[in-house]
Length: 304
Image 1 (cartoon, rainbow, N blue to C red):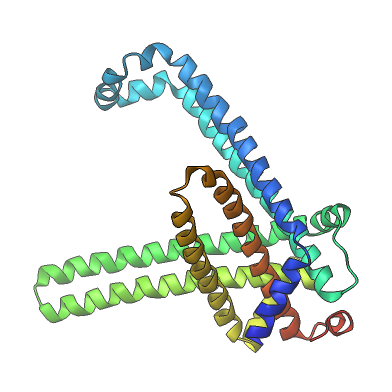
Image 2 (image 1 turned 135 degrees about the vertical axis):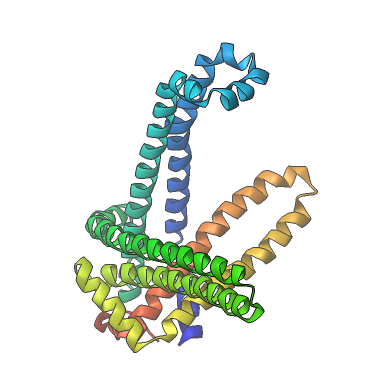
């Protein structure tokens, strides 16, 4: 089933190559907005600080000696740049979720209906349908991740305090067990965070495919992973495969980088290739979920 899902994932991605162009368009919009929200305030700040920058060699000593005076002097500029950065993060996150909603909706429709043809209108229709639910889902899951992260920090601090006390006691055996406990917590934390991320991915897929609310989608993803725990392995295989392909492509890039005239072409190919791999990843996960849940429309629209 893993190999079949990957093969059909490539087929699904190839049938919807327009999504790669949509992702590239989103990237270009993000770059433009980055310049507007971050670049322009920085340019304005540099223009405003023109006199001070002429004496840049004295700026660092002044900052070290009088940090509060420096902050109070340029507080307004720091506030403007900080606020611009926050607004940029909000915009780019919103745009990413909106585009993801359209992407997953198109891939789902294409997977369950072999007659489906991509169109700009259908992309925006799916984005409008899925965005608000994806936003609520991601917000809820992100809150859970933050809580887990805080718990891990507290656990790490407690273990660090215990380790320090044991180290002062001087027993080599006690130091070994305390170090082992600390390493266990770190590894366990990484595993939990990785599993939580994969669960979030399948929750988003369940939300789009099932068309249900946030809590129902979370329950569907949980039931799916409980029924098919190998889905975690499937995601890991996809992730490792993408890394391996990127390493190969990077090696090819290096071999062509010695020819300066090829650099722009290689960059454009890299942008297209990275976005294509992202579509393949989502396509494979959608196919795998549909197969694993025996989604009823799947058999009517797609030959296995």
